[in-house]
Length: 539
Image (cartoon, rainbow, N blue to C red; front, side):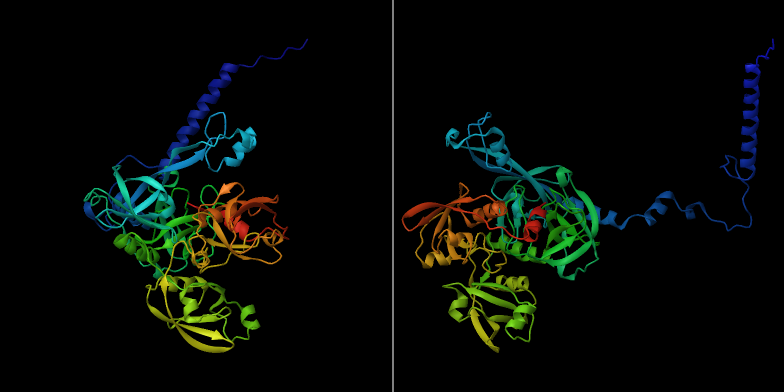
């Protein structure tokens, strides 16, 4: 038999150990010789090198300050003036016989109704209320304790609390709100307590340019004084459909938004958008939940004018002309043989309005307002609203191919006037154009209903026309939901605009009340305004 020699394992291990020590030592010697590793030994000075005093040697902090982000100074300047706004709102609801007794009108309505499958007979009709808390941001604008925020942050609030940057909390009063621009002005009730926190400096939003730095500061998701950085992406955005957290349309009437890609999230509403100098150039308001880097802020120059009136009188007074209009485009200009493409065309003149009294007619093309050329419908809207009621202005009008100047004495705009009376861009829902029952059309026809909306016009061939609805009909309920104001009707119409099944209307005509079911006609495409609406929400 052949025998194999048994390997000496212990010897081989010792051999590998000594080899490892040898190569480790060799590596250390080579590295130190070539100065590849730092040496702990003192080195002889280089006599040829320029001599410097110890104070001239740059310190680590000095090196860092040279590379410090420019946004550090902006954040340190603005953050002390940013506050957390907490509002307490009473939410009313009705008992529905659910296992937990209460059912409230909130975004989960359809979920609970479908899940528990309760029939209307199980509703006991009792009304309840609970308190709900909303959160947002705000910015201190003077040492007296005045704070800017959004109207939708404090709308309907019974109590508002603000938390300062030093964590002190104070009760604040709502000085005034303006839903048409979504601005609110608050004031801390205790005087002289904000000086150490700092006051934000308001800039000039007319000077900003696309591509300028934009820094948003606020409290997204309760994360106090979060700073995000981006640029001004666009200016003058208008015609946006913006929803609240429940999906109801709460679009401000007057829109001239700054668009930015500085990250804005839920809770940023009311916080400042600032420039690289730390000056407030806008109030953050809305976001696009379907895309990154699309947020919107109200220009500070618009905010200043609103805040000034709210501070003086608690309300905003605006000029009123009394027309429905749309922006002039090339096709309309071509059809009317016009040599201009900028201006607005009058779609309808309201009865009992300054425009009617001055002789403005349907089909008139207005190209100048008090000597200023009209570039867009939103610009015209701001021109009218920004003019003091009672002032006589001159409108340059093209009628039948001829230019003429018509003087008009502006009235005062009623906040409950016709739905988007001077910005009628929405298509009539189901063929219905409606107005508040407190508007001029209702007054003219002696409609005395306190609730609901009045039908102003019915589009021929529309679902409403097919079912026999008429002007002067008063819509009291839609989809079993009570209509108490024009805002309610707008919100419900947005909720239901894509519903395919029939929608129940409760209508009053004279002394008679009746139900009518309207069903939307199929469209070739559901893209467009619907997507634009769904994607934008208050932040």
